[in-house]
Length: 269
Length: 300
Image (cartoon, rainbow over all chains, first blue to last red):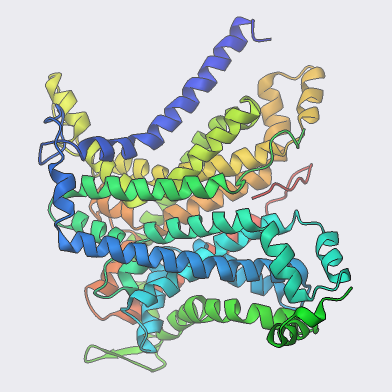
């Protein structure tokens, strides 16, 4: 088939189209990276020459450093709590059949489907009313509400592969329900727990709308970027962006390394 | 055989509770509470304050329908609503149409190894700073930006790339395209190849196979890709702000401005709740779409 000229053309067209798509997706990231090392104040062509000035400048900007530190703290807090809650939610959904199960799962799965601007506004309105807004842990709490959806999904996928006989064998050997969870189910899910941890961290690190609303005076690095973008053009943004992109990409790649976010290859046909 | 002796008392007590019929209740309570306090309650409260009043810059409980009538009779809301609907419909169509050929190649024409690599490459942008990538597009498209500095160097006039429908759609596609491609790849991967081969063996052209076999059997995937793209574009704040300078405003911009630049919480809530009602309606309508001749589930 591939020898026919028409097929050959189709083959080439398909590859070129796919390449263009990836160029479209990669271009913005590469631009941030390349111009963070540009000597010019305003990114333009031709390049002004290699310089580390902006990369050095961001580490002496206390607003940026504080925001980065906040983000790291919030991302780690979110990752730990989301993974724990996500595991429990996935386990309950997998193990039990109960009334209101759809509602239970829906309540955890739905937050990412609500536009962040509305969710952020609603969270601020409610949490300030009950006197719990404008704190670092407020941002963590709200990020957890968002990220647990992804944690639950990743872990639930893995639980579906466990096979009911494994846990039952543990029970038959005298393990309690709790012991079976700790010694059999958790180890079985270890990879997906790690994936969930890194993905939740990436989601939190990247999130700016909710953090902007509920954070009060506490800025995360993404909120700092948003505030910088709303002001004058600032050549530091590229350097901050490079650091942030690097962190995000590493977190997502590690998360993917520990999970399959796609159907198993070769098994379908 | 039983290792009960070795188990500490506390864990045995917990174990007994877990084996009781109320197992799911105890295990599920913390996560349920968390989602109620930080997700459900805020949204319910949002609905509640659409009926409240602002008196001397303070939000006060009341039951007035004034906020609803004011927002719905204001021309700025009406214009933002139509603008937002229009731009998110355009994004939806563009995202699905542009995503399909790429998803087709990835799912059916690449080797399993390359397919996995392509999917991994698509997942990365979904979770890595959308905000920064929009800023990068600003650098590319602005009057002093990269495209224009090349263009004027080549002797052209400065092109007004930033600030129109084109730049807005570039921004929104940055957000929606990777997800649309992934959804369609997953849908296409679960189509049975024997079906496609059968159609080809019966003399169908490639085009006929796509139109009469492939597209109908991935209808749920198409609907999911479209609704996801619509949802993201409809609620997005970043692209309209940075790619068109909030002109014309969208509903998300209206929400943020109403909250940030004053104490008009009830009116902002009316806009937010209206957006949620509209999105819910669209999701319910999408579920009415028949799932096609071969009801295949895909994994997501």
